[in-house]
Structure formats: structure tokens, C-alpha cells
Image (cartoon, rainbow, N blue to C red; front, side, top):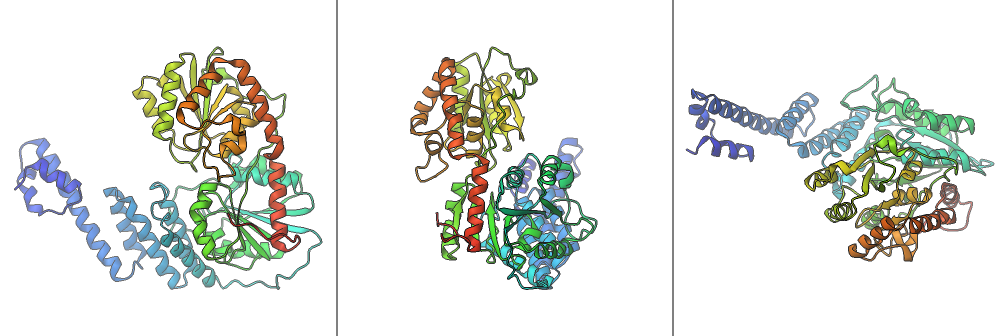
Length: 535
């Protein structure tokens, strides 16, 4: 028999040992031994319970809700979250097979959201993603929704519907929605939100966390749409997901939408089911993170080139038209001063290096963190300001280890990113790749940017956006460019002004809206060009 520590280590690794081996330690007069042995015994029994519950669920094809919840709770206690997503998907599949649309929709949505903390490990697998799309299609069939009238209407002006999960003023989708309200000349726009992430009065499967309703998170955007006479329809919260889907489908069809833009992913059950229903004449799926892989859409627009390249083989196999859409920025008012440095505890004499971390790009790379540490050490008068929606913990830990934590601040996600970056002197683009949104915000603020060239095939790479002369070919050149900007204020002003001028050449949100409306016209047959080119 092994020592207590050896037994505990084996149990922590997931091994199933004979419980009797712990008896002697559980009866020990030594409090520490009794504690460790009793806790190990509890974990051992939990693992056995997990195994039995899995066998029970397997016997009925994961078709029992109560036993599934017990199984998920034990997985949570054991820290085996990676197994939860697959279990919930299998339960959803069983519910879809029984034509229980509401239950299946809630379970599928929950499964995708359970996968987020594990960096989409389950849903990144192509076969798993296709399986989820197939179950959403079965949910659509179970709804039994059919249009009251044919979709052969003839509108005097193109009608575009924009379907999104929610409206939140600090989200990229809200900025595009607001731009559609401002710049959609020649087309009539309707906005629809599924509110799928909100708490509903009738819940069958889903457990929180829930987000507040769009009326609370997106008040500025909704007010702007009202002033621009853009109709906004919110899916009702007093119904389950299936009933809310029918309600929204009826409204979209009544509005006689020519092209429905679906700006949502598989974590939105209502949008995923609507993608399979004939609610409009054509449907365009806009992909920000995860595609729905629906077979009932007519075109796909990506906002991120690497994501498009990763999914390209699937779309090519289905002959689905795909296109890359560059989201621009609104011009900043010249008289706007933006936030003050004092609000972040930054001395006026400091040189501020700023960066934006994006969830699309993932956590900061080791190479990028080492570059930051090098620049702060070599330039004592500099401070770092980090913004964006990605987790800044890796940078925090690295700076703490380097003794530089007091020279960094963290601002999180900002809805006023362009104005906010006026606090900075130099913008450091992530290495090896930076999202275009952060660089555009810095260009719009008139700040110089240090970036690597990136993939030459990427229309959003640093060279394409900044100009070949402004990018570094390797990390050594990157550090040299940053050092030059830190030491030469006149150079910062010159390059920042040049980059601000480039924004109006092709990176304004008005131009994004024009390109999107042209794409919708092509899909609708109003223009002779093909709907989209394959990337």
C-alpha cells in the first residue's frame, strides 16, 4: 500500500483506487492525515458517482434532464469542465429527436456557452460544430414555422434586416448598427435583437449567468436608431426560446426583408434557428468569432482574416460565397480631448505606450510581453496602458515578475477607444498579429503605431493598413521603431498625422456600410457582380 501522499496524488490524477486503502488514514489521530484522507475519499466517491451517472445517461442516450444536472454538478466539483459541453450537446440532440424545440435550443445554447471558458475546445472541432448546426436545423423543423405569404415581394427600396444577439453600446456590432442608421442611404434598415443571452420568464434548461436587456446595455445606440427612424424589434422575454423565435420570425417576414444580416453565432439559439427558416429572401451570415455553418444561408461575411482562412475549406466544399468585410471607424471630433491622464494616475511628463488586446487574437504572446518588458526597462520615463476585451492577466503576471507592475494600467473594454487612445503617445500593436480594430482606433486618434508586417495575403495586415514604410519586419526592427518614437516627439506627431489621414482613404465606417449594402444588393440581384468572392 502506498503512502497517503502517494494515494492522494493518484486520486488527483483521476485514478480510481480501492477505497479501503484510505481507511487507516481516516481513522488516524493525526488531524492532517484525517483531513487529507477524508477529502481524498470524497473525491474518489465523486469520481465513482460520475462514472455511474455517465453509464446511466449513456443507457438512455443522455435523455434525462435531472440526471444530467446531477452529472454536470459532479463534473463541476471535479473541475472536469471540458466534459460538460459534450454532455449537454448530447442531451440537446435527444431533445431535438423528440421534437422538443425549446428544450433543445436552450441546451444547445448552454453547451456552446459552456465551451467558452475552455477556449471553444469542443466547438472548434469542425465535426462538433457541424453536429450542433444539424441539431439547430432539427429544432427549426420541430418549430413547424412556415411563412404566411411567399417571399416574392417587390420592395421599392432594398430592405435590410440586421439580426443580432443584443445591442450593447460598447460592442463592435452596436457600432456597425449605429453606422447603418447613419449611412444607409438608398436602403431601409430594420434591426432585430434575439435577447437570447437575457433571463427569460420561461426557462427549461438554461442556467445563468445572464446579460441585461438591450434597452439597458444599448441605450445610446437605440436612441440614435430612433432619431434615424430605424425600427428596432426585441424578441420577447416572457416566452421560451422556441416561442420567441416564432415571434421574431413572424415579425421579420411581416417586414418583408430582402436580405437578413445575421450577426450572431451558435451561442445564440434564436439566431441559429432563424438561419434555417425562410423569413427573408436572402440571408447573409456575419462571422465575428464562431460561424454557424448553417446550410440555409446565401453568403458569409467575415470581419477577421485568420478566422476566414481557417473556415475556408468548409465554405469551399459547400460552394458558399465568402467575403472579408473591413469594419471602419467614425471620424473623431477634432475638439474632443478624450480622457485625462490624471484619471489613470499617469504623470503628464510620462511617455505612454498603449496596446489593445482583442479576444479574437487571444492572450498576449510571450514574444509581445518580452518586447513590452524590454521597452519599459530601457526607457524609465515610459508607462504602459492596456485596453481591450481580452484577459490581461498574462501581461500583469509578467510585469509583476519583472518588477514593473507599478508602471502599467489596465482600462478594459472601452466604447470610446479612439478618444481613449489620445491619452497615449505610441501604440504597440500585438505581436505577431494585431486585430485591425485596435490599429484603426490608434490611427483615428492620430497616434503612431509600431507593428509587424503580418501575413501578406491578409488585407487587414499592418502593411496594408499603415503602409509598407511603417511596419517592422522582425522583432528587432519593432523594438527599434518603438524606441525612435519614444525618444523623438516630433517623429510621433508626423507619423501620427500621416496615419490619421489614411483613415479617410478607406477605413471609415461610412465606407463599411456602403460595402455591406452593395453586398446585399449583389445578393438580391440588383447588381451584376457575384454575391461575394471566395477568399
